[in-house]
Amino acid sequence: MKINNTQPLEYSTEQNQLNILGFWVFLGAEIMLFATLFTSYFVYENRVGNGPSGAEIFELTPVLIETILLLTSSFTIGLAINAMRLNRKKAMLTFLAVTLVLGLAFLGVEIYEFTHYYHVGATLQTSAFTGMLLTTLGTHGAHVTFGLVWGLFIFIQIKKNGLTPATTNKSFIFSLYWHFLDVVWIFIFSFIYLKGMM
Amino acid sequence: MKELFPIKQVNGFIFSMLLTVVALSVYFLDMSFELGMTILLITAFVQAAVQLVIFMHAGESEDKKAIYTTTIYGLIIALVTVFGSLLAMVWGYM
Image 1 (cartoon, helix red, strand yellow):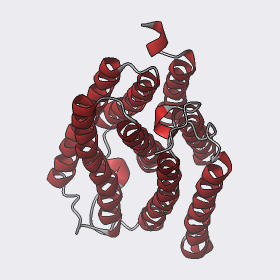
Image 2: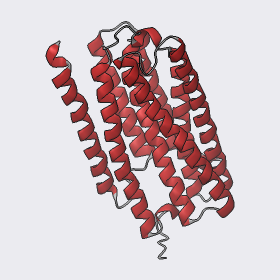
Image 3: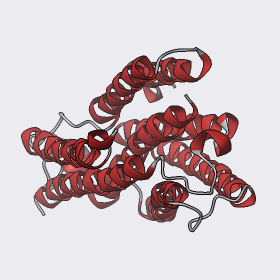
């Protein structure tokens, strides 16, 4: 394995560089996936049938809490990568743990939100609007859930194996994924919630 | 301790919080739909760019060109899908 010491550890082998580039290509495809969900949502936004409209069921407080949690977790995973590059294993693991706890809290609030929608009669079958709303939010939530499991395994691997070209590469790719989820959330926050409550 | 909180990322975080507050103004202030949407479009895309450049280090490696190409390609397809569909299925019938 050829190791290039002029680059951060996560870029140090050719395979590592290709992994990172490959993940960016995947994120490009993820942008398009969420674009199709947003498209369907915008097209069906006003097709509420006999069900409630967005303005009637959206609550600002939980949405704002979710936004702050996810924005902060995106910041802490950035700090984790920074600590990783300084070869500070303990600090890196702390920031990663904080990120995962914030992600878990986000998921908790989102689950509360979904039960709220269920109780006010906005289910997947109620109308085109609620169906697409829950599909879009649910796809993002499923991504966060997957990210939490992924992040947990990376945490264990770094704890066991330390900061190696392999584990740093995985961590960096995970950080890209996590930041991407934050970007998607910003669009959900702006164009689903705030637009709906305006 | 200080090296664990690089100024660039701290500023990026504060800036993204500020953008969130600006976006919230569409909820708390009384404004027209057009003005509100303009504010939201600007704050959302600026915020996405902050994440991409500061936190995701999009421009730091030698694959910079390929990374920006694949992101912008995804973005163009996304915008064409969203606005093309709105044009064909919603705006034309208002």
